[in-house]
Length: 242
Image 1: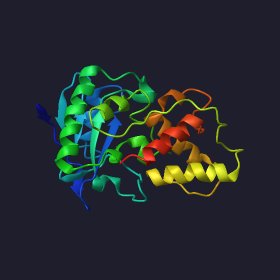
Image 2 (image 1 turned 180 degrees about the vertical axis):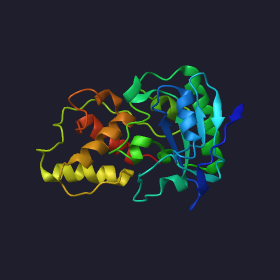
Image 3 (image 1 turned 90 degrees about the horizontal axis):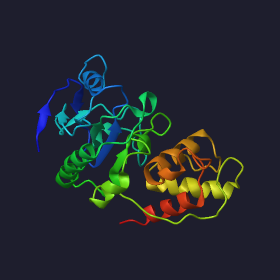
């Protein structure tokens, strides 16, 4: 696999072993602008790799080092996601600059790179995540157009299928018990939210992040940010995954 070295000074030492792969989109107008920022000491951000739309892979930080890509984030009640994660930036303008589908060659290279990383470090499928999963209040990437199902078919990450269900949406006006059940499932899966029976902004953001990853058909519809029956069924199947 050809990898172009484009080093970034923005890294430090890890505080714990690698057990997570975190996928991002660059969210900037061009690849060059994104990589310039990742390599700028003043930006205080970086990633281990960037995969361009033509499939070219750039490495910015050695995997053994802690790159600065997750920011304020949390998974499974642990806040220092950077220490445990390998970060891959995937060139795409993102929601701010013209979000678009990811080219097939780009995804092919992401799969090849990600496959090597998860195999080498023994990363569990449940720990292949998007930036939005670990920072749902701040981030949307890699977004609802990212082909998570295709990656799962290649052995990278989780996916679950569930039929559409006619149950009522769980939201602000739902019974406390229903909200607590939703929050409990999200918390058990890994999202850092309180189980308090209150459907506030943090819960809604977590649901939206979950839908972007695992139930993208809800994004852009009236169900976005609310847990419909399909969302609940997919979440339950994922919790039962080995």
